[in-house]
Image 1 (cartoon, rainbow, N blue to C red):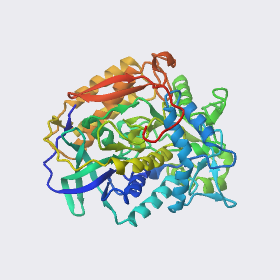
Image 2: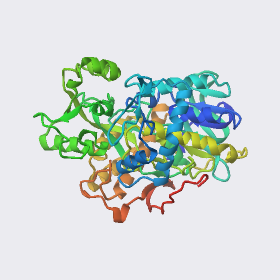
Image 3: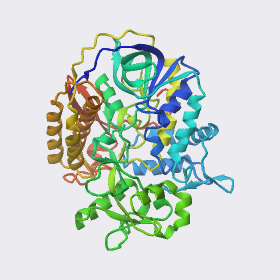
Image 4: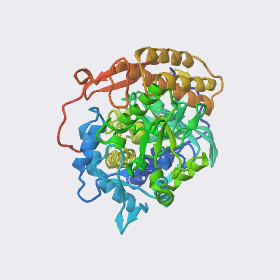
Length: 549
C-alpha cells in the first residue's frame, strides 16, 4: 500500500504549537485543556465541528457517580466485557478518573438529565449498576458536543479550521512530528492542500465505520487518522475487535451507509429481544439476559438469523408506552416513526451492524504513540480500555479521560521546532470506484462471523483493489486509499488471531485460547509498503498506576 497519499505540493502554510485533528469529545477536550499551556492550538475537523460521531451517541456516558457505586465495580464490568483483552492499568485509569471528568463536563455547561434534583442514571448492557448519565433522554452526545463547542468558541486561543481532511504527517529527521498536510475544501482563508508546521499532533479523528456497507457511523468515518498514523510508522493495535451493535434498525437488504441505532438504553429500560415466533431471544443465554455484553447479544441474534434464515430479529418495547417513549427516547422515537414503525405499538426490526472500533493507534497510558510528538485519543486510539468488546457508554468516557491525560503531559514533552525532511515514502492512490467493492468484501468476509478462508480471500481482494491507481488526487481517492489501508490491517489482524474472543468471532476457531492469546495484542505496522502483523504478549500487570509509566 502507499507510504503516503499522492497529493499536490502545499499551496499555503501556517504554524501552530499543537494541531488537534478531530472535533468530537476527544478532540474538543484536548484543545480546551491544552490552550493555556502550549502556545497556539489549531483544531482541525473534516466537516463542521458537530459532524463527528459524538453527536450520535444516544445512551450516555458511564461513570461511578451513583449512590453505592464505585470505580472498582465499574472496573470489574469493563474487564468482563473486554473478555480478557483489556489493559488492566488503563481500565483503572478510566474508571478512577472518570467521575471527575464527567463533573468537569457539567461545569462546562453540559445539561445532563436530573430526577428530583439528582443526576438521572440508567443501566446498559454489561453494567451491574445504574451509572449511565444521559441528556435530552437519548441525545447525550449532541448535548456534550454542544457544550464543548460553545467552550471552544469562547476560547480565542484555539484556531479552528473546518472542512479540512488531514492527509499525512510531515516527519523530522528523527522520525518524529514536524508538521501535517491538510486539504481544506474551500473554507476561510485556506483552500486546497497546505502544510501546518507544528511541534505535536493529537489525533482524535474517530473510527472507520465506512469500511462496512452498513454502520451507525457518519459518512466522515473513513479511518483517516488510523491510516495517517500507520503511514507515519505507528502501530495499529487490536483492529480485529470490531464491535457490531446488536440493535441497529433493519431497513431492508439494500440499505447501506449510516443506519439508525436503537440504543442499548432502550433494553436498559426494559425492552427485550424476540424472534419471529415471539420467543425471548436472550432467555438462558446469559445471566444478564437482554443486558448481556454487546458481543454476546450480537452473536445470539446472528445465530438465530442463521438458524431461521431471517434477515433480522425484533425488539419489543411496546410495554414502555407512548408517554415514556416521548419523554425518555424522543430522538429514537422520531427515527422509528420516520421509517414507519411506532415502537409503542409495533415491534422494531433489528440486526447487528458495525458500530465501534475497539482497536486503533497503539498508545500508552498518557496517549503517546511510538511516533515522537504524535498522541492519540478517543476511537482512533487503542488505549487498552476496551479489550475485545467495549462496555456500553465507555467510549465517551475514554475520549474525555485520555484527552485530559494527554494535556497533562504534553506541555512538558513538547518537541523543539524541527524542519520536515524530504519525504521518501512512496506515494499512491486508490481509485474511488473501488469503495463499494471494498465495503461489500469487508461486510461479507470480515464482518460478524469470520474464517481463515474468508479472511485470506478478503486480503487478496484488498491487495488487488490497492493496485487500482487513481490519477486524481481528491477527497474520494484519499478516503478510499485510507479505507483500503485500514481494511487490510483489520483483515490481517483478524487472520492472525486464531480464536474467538469478545467481538472477534472465528467459526474455524470457536473457542477462546487464553494459553496462546490471553491478554495479548495484535499489532499491524507498515514495513516497506506492506502491512505486517505480530503478536505482542501481555505484560505483567502493575496494580498501581504511576504517572509517566
